[in-house]
Length: 156
Image (tube, rainbow, N blue to C red):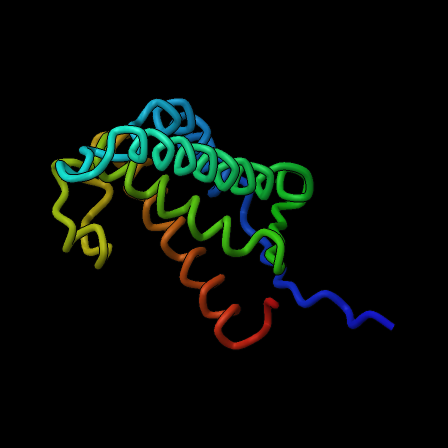
């Protein structure tokens, strides 16, 4: 008999999280257009860099697809997101990619220290920057939750 799948379900407020998911969806096109490597290593082979870049883009796109799928279905109806052994690691990687994109494209004026501490009065920001900042913190919080549940064996 197969043991039951270990997973974590989180209920989120649709009113609070939907605007943040809209930010994520809006970034997907930008993320897919972003180069996977800011610059190639000078001593590496151009063909190797091209193959590596293609693999990075394919993996990133697949991971972002997992992230978007988490916020469809049960989430759009009930505010419920579920993490399990199939989607946890791709979700973590996708969150990192989206957070880096947010940092580079929407939050460039905010220091890394402020982004990581969350120590900023979001009410003083313009609406677009405020949503980006809150989305950054939201994804960081979910990432941390999923990482903790993987480490403690709840997800596995």
